[in-house]
Length: 187
Image (cartoon, rainbow, N blue to C red; front, side, top):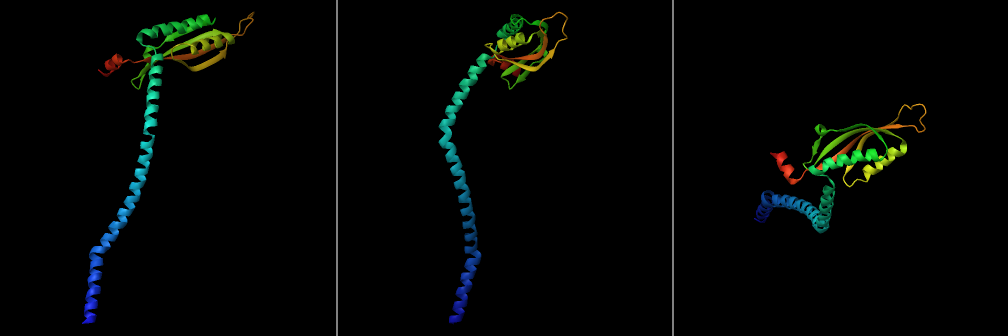
């Protein structure tokens, strides 16, 4: 009887292990692995949460800088003045203007914030005059960038004391699209 009871107890323990405890051990191992993964996620989120106030402060700073830069972009009314200023810079630098062509057809809208307005320029003058022109464009109160710059030596005329250079470039004016203009573009 003792052997039969022992065998039945062992069979009951084995059956309990096989049908119940084995699944619990597997579930426990899965839950422990999941716990480690959740702890890692929690630590990452905790680090992000700790830096959130600094990030919000940086966002406010970035937005104020963006507003300041957007104020430097000309509106519709100021574009003509800026084109005139660039033309005046050519003349004030002592350069001979061969080509001054605003290209409104070549404008490109960027990120619904601004429009690029290219102006193709070709001027002739000496080295110092070209430097003075570039310096005066850089000192303008509005953002104007110079692209595709090419400086070549002009064929000198006999009797010229200074060697003339030809400057070819594209000046980009970045026009700010105000809220009114964004609404017009979206319609």
